[in-house]
Length: 288
Image (tube, rainbow, N blue to C red; front, side, top):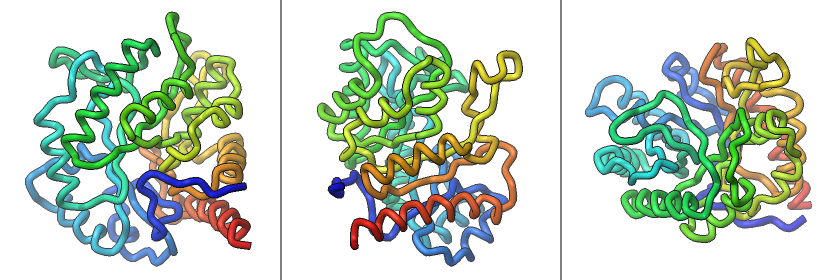
């Protein structure tokens, strides 16, 4: 296996956690090697207060990633200039080693939806997304990572597969990929596709970060429809895909996401340490 270049990776990071306010003290004190933290950028777009003070303290000691949820890059309109300006200010202040957003849309004509919505992968949409990604990167003065979505139903009219769409987007804009393996697993199960074939078709060198999260069966449809809840531990199926992926492409900064039913910090660190062990084992094999 050949080590491939990564986008925005740092030798200081291994596996990290999504930072939650209830865990600030433990996060700041944790001595784990390679530990880093990610926050949703929109939660910190404020002028001041305790939230920014805590983030400042953690950033002095730990690497930080900013993960956005509000740019609506797959919308048929450009990202909000005011939102971009505030994101730029946050980036300039905290100097994250990675910044990322979703391949989805959530607003149109000033109407905002509290969800990350799908779209038809047409050539016209590829041009639209690439334009929005380029506008974002120009405004921020840096490349960003784009996260693959979780899908719940098949849309008609696609002109290319999702890996093909992502590869073209990377080639056109110079952005990187945030590979959410839980999203890959969910989409494959819901749509009857192959998760391993999807992963093998991605442009490996563009993958700058990996997300691992939990999911749950839909209350009505059960196992026939999996939902990306971020409210449960990472499943064994997703862990298996993760180990296979890291073994094939080499180590990448990896984040454990948990946004609902949030457990104690120590419980999250068990999952984080499992990801760290996978990364360390592959790193040792590469160096042998």
